Length: 103
Image 1 (tube, rainbow, N blue to C red):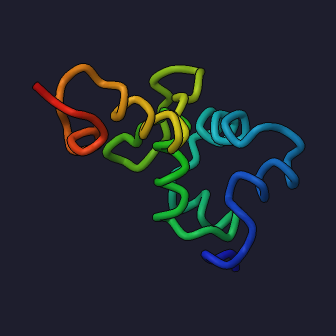
Image 2 (image 1 turned 45 degrees about the horizontal axis):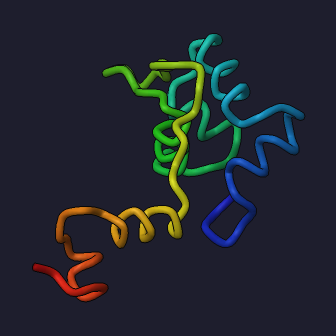
């Protein structure tokens, strides 16, 4: 059984099925898998699967089936890019309030 100390959901699926985790989720989605069935198949907790479904820019229906909003995963900014965006903002915010002289 996989847990937080085990390899990442993404790595396990990519090694097991030899394709990206998004493609694997799309395959399971097209076969009508629910989160609970996917949990039993992969050995991951349903909460972990829901988290990775969100990361794949997909959604769950009321019957817990996976539906994809778009075929592309969302691009998360790295932590450094986010901090840099806050520091370089033209308006004052919590990230840049002490970084320069204002006004």
